[in-house]
Image (cartoon, rainbow, N blue to C red; front, side):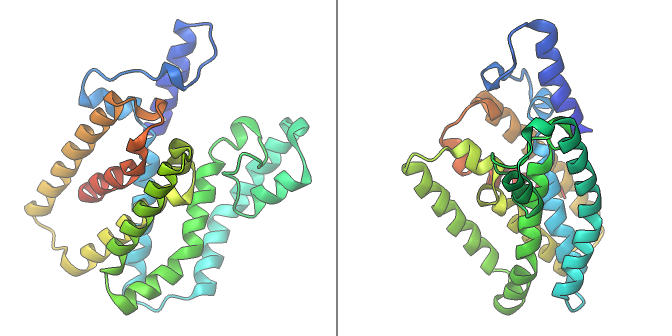
Length: 255
């Protein structure tokens, strides 16, 4: 619902107010932290990534993880519907079809600019591609965490932060890299895994954890408001090096 409100607020409101086609330069400024939750509603994707890794980690903690079983279950849960909407996107946007673009879309590269553009039918495929990149990595990451303990995850977060920082210094488009690719989003999955490990080891239902949820909500509202005042998703600057990590950390506390 948050994603729906987000797109409605930006696209429909802009259409009602202007005849000029929408682009990121029209990104609105929030008047308070609560409105920033809607104006920066893309944060729901980050929450989904954190939750996804959290659920996988908790679900795998007390049983043996089967690579084959994990990949089979992920495929059966996501790909039938994915292929259905991909087919609709091709049928109604046949002019955008090519075999190379179809291959990219099917084989986990639907977030590539060269993947099939099926209009509204494939608009969210970029997030499915990133999710699948994590699916491919998760069994290996989980086994490494089992071997080296949770300390591996903060170390990996620092490594990927360093990579993004280096790429920023090289002039890389940080908005595109941090928002649309696994290199930018990997921290959110790693933080989700870290949260899952904490939950398995320490969680006991109590008011103390309710207070953590409230703290997380306050932090995410504050972070989104500051992010919006710095230009939000409509600006491309150095904040994108660290923003996915901050965003995920706030959601992790909430979770």
